[in-house]
Length: 539
Image: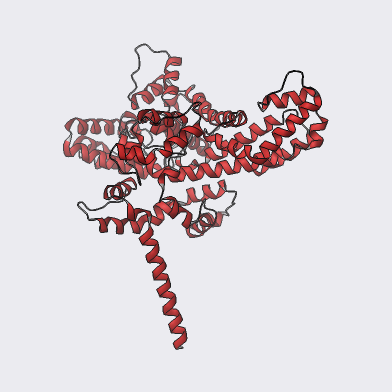
């Protein structure tokens, strides 16, 4: 008995040492106090001011696991289910309602282990730049005088910017462990908004540059993990398909098919090459693809293209993203003039007098990623009847309160009263404006998850009519709700990528990889096509 007690005590002591070692080695223990405050602020975790370093570290320690190491612990069941689906894990209906069960499954299928996550935060520069566009890297290098040898490929830009990361931070007198706004100084607000949209984190209706930067910064790790997972999936799929290009297939191809393959792969064919020489070139290229080119080609889905083959991959994945933009363009093509103008007005884009519908559509497409103003005429567009009433009752405006008590008031009456009350508070400023915006923020946040759920058929049809979207005869209530949500998402974000479909981009890019590789097999062996189709089914 005494031996058991001793073993138990030793086990507890060992656990305590491990826990103590982890805490003492946590990345944030070496951060500057301003970085500690920045991390808490980025993650909307309130902290006392003034606060000493120990208080800040203790507060981060309590939240570190669920925000930095395993952010899925803060997700709702829809996001957990969506993630599992993206990883090919099917969930039963009974499981979807059990959050603990979903969390356990996500933990088992997460991108990285806890140890790897802890290590990653000790060197932010190793991953925070990887999701930047080539133009963003160029702008940063130019702004800070970082010499980049020609040709300035994305690989080279990324390498040079990473190498000079600490030097630039010291030069501008800033910290680099959890970088401040200096890192994004060369980004416009549209650049920030586009990064958020592209990486599956639609920005709320804000124009505050600091808030946009905070959103980019706090989501950069997750964006990087998704990108790496996406790249690995694409590389594995590409290798699986290229492995079907056997010697038998190559030997069966004629001269025209071999030349077509070479052309699609950017293989330089010397003039006058004979058929057997063409086959030798194809085999050489296949060996390079299967050995190491695919990995770099997959990376080029994110711009790291250093070869002709890599560039072909980048073009295909760009096409997948282009498809999303085309969908938005198609939706905009059916919008009414008033809705087009409202989209532009919400983003502070001036509309030239006498603009025609096609000119307005072009202007909307051009400003798809521009951040919208937090509160304007359209803010009340998709708030439910009850939410509008609550807002009016709590607005502090006597006229608005009167309308909220009118049981005969229509939704249009409530919207008009809400706009008027907000306008008055905005003009008055001070505590009236602060109160109005504070309640509106809560109201819109509460309504976000249940938008359109309580709307009647006539309200949904009127909403869609404001967009100029025709409603097919016989549409069910659920179909109307789905169409209303789609149009609302287009209007708010300029993208089809709301938070509930945050993993859509990964799927698009992997399918882009498939399309690219299928292009390489353009000459078309039936055996190769059949095997490639099996790979596509797995995607």
